[in-house]
Image 1 (cartoon, one colour):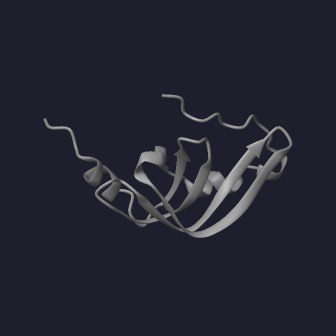
Image 2: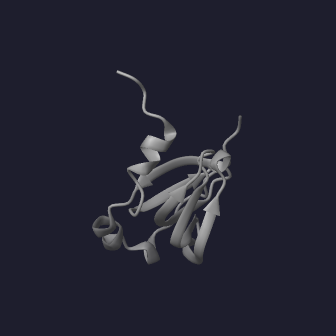
Length: 100
């Protein structure tokens, strides 16, 4: 069995609500609208969720492009579960950048 290409994997997430963790430690949520041959991705209706020891802040971004070499993790968001989380009372440590 062959390993699926990044394009095949990314195509399964098109038009779905996803969360992207970037290599600099940012958490960006939005609807995946497309991608290119370098795995750069286009998110629509996106926002950055900034989690810190002081709490969670959501920063609206709108249409947002993330270069493929800056994508560390991408996964589908269970929106019904995400909506039940009390983000206003959530606190946590900021993600550290990926170190190569």
